[in-house]
Length: 471
Image (cartoon, rainbow, N blue to C red; front, side, top):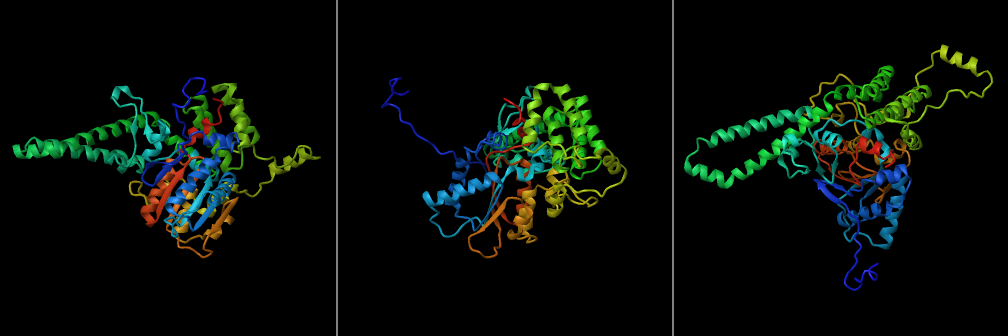
């Protein structure tokens, strides 16, 4: 092409490696937003070498971790590629390591964390508007809000509210607004030399702070306007699904969402998938009825979406208790319906109980001053990976216990000795949620351990569901 266009010899071509970008304190992202679809929907692993190379770069900079924990089909492939890269491209020059333990895990280790609605400010910003490359775009012209706004801890307002439960955000913003008003009143009674000093040293900072404060107040108002009418009902339905209770009430809520247009199609699918995951599938008659209502509401062009969700294991039918081909099945089914059977716990329930992911009811708890990681979901659920790191830090479990808890999990301990792990690198293949980021940041404060989070991108339930729609 260069020769055809007559530019050969004038243009140089360079190949740049796709590396991690620092989006916030201890948070790195590849910003590869199509990776989830490529891996978990299309089954295309051609981008895995890029992820392996990014981990290799981290290891060269930080040192090779003493312990590496790998979980999931795609992560195991990445780990093999990483081992080969150490052989071919080299190993870190340093003998020590700044990372005690590295996790490389697939997104599907904990789908619940990505399907649930987060309760922190950053979660709801991502839920309502979407955050890409650290930039949120709030389309609200009447409030004169700029199109794009970069979110980072350099913004002193955002750094204070990003991990707060949303119910605690407005009180903080209100307090800061009052402080600004007091500063304005104070400036009106200043002497000339005080005014001169205020203008030269403080006025610019106060003006910038005022703009940031106004932006986040307007963002909160937009979130309330978008989520307020359905937030409480959605939270209640999600909690019922997690605890496998009030099944009929939950199904009625989903049907109401469809018939009264309470939620969009992505939110409805998230509830269906969450219910399927937590209960090992939906009853055939329930699923068929809900699918039919979904098609009536949003169109039959979405038939392929349910096929793709079923293929990914996100929305499936429960296996029949008795095959219809068995002789005498009608009589057997009548007996089954007449005789009460002991309640069978789902795979998710067993997993959640092992790791204590669902906190007990009745504990006195202030969301404004959280002391456990479940606050990111309104005390309904603790992100699984965060809880695993938490239990390792507290020595409630050892790294040798992990293969018994997590399927397809391998542990590589370079020293062969039991480690006192206090520094962690968490690499999530397929995307990390802002709820998990907030939970990890709280975990750092509670335990004093150091946690660096890296991922292919940020993700939420809406972006996961959109991956199953044909573009």
